[in-house]
Image (cartoon, rainbow, N blue to C red; front, side, top):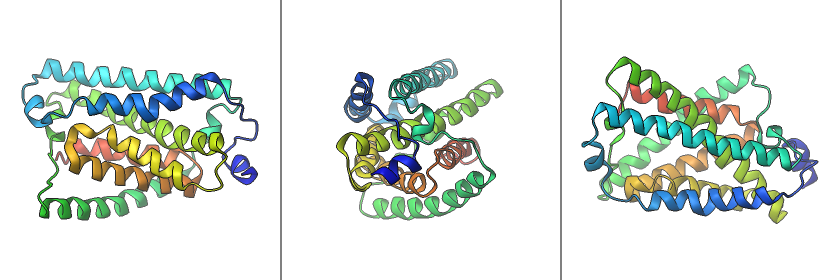
Length: 235
C-alpha cells in the first residue's frame, strides 16, 4: 500500500466529504443517467439538425469540465492535488505509449466487435451521425475530443481507481479496475449491450495503460486521438 501511495503521489491523502460525493457520482449517478437513455441512438441522432448537434456537443463539453472541476476541488481537499491521480508533467514517452496503445487496443476491439456481430450483437455505429459537417462544428468536435479524453480519463482512471484502492485499503488493483471499467461502460449504455461490452473492454485496456505508466497522459492522448479520428473515419 505504501509503495502504491508513493508511486501515485498519494502519501498525504486524507478522506474528504467530497471524496464520497465524487465516488457516488462516478459509480452510481453518472452511469445511471446514461442507463435512462437506452432508446435507439441512431433514430434519435438522425433527427438532429446542425444547430441541435452543436448544442449537444457544447453541452457535453460544459458538463465534462464541470465534472473535472469537482474532481480538482476534491483532490485539493484530499491534500494530493491532481498529481495524486496521475496528472503529472507530460513526457515525450507518453505519446509513444499512446500510439502503441491505440494500435493494440483498436486491433483487440475490432476483433471483439466482429465477434459480437457474428452472434447477433452488432455495434450501432451512430458516431458518424454526431460529426458536424461544417468547419465551425468540426472545430468544436476537436474540443469535444480533448475534453472527453482529459475529463473522462482523470475521472474514471485517475480518480476512481486510486480512490477506491485508498478508501478500501486494497492490496491490488483488481477491484478498482473492474469497477472503473464497468462504470465507464455503463456510461455508454445508450449504445446498447454491444456498446457496453466494447466500451467496458476499452476501459479495462485504458486501466492497464494507466497502471503501467502511473500517468494519466498516455490515456488522455490515446482517448483524445481515438475520438478525433472519428472526423476522418466515422463509424
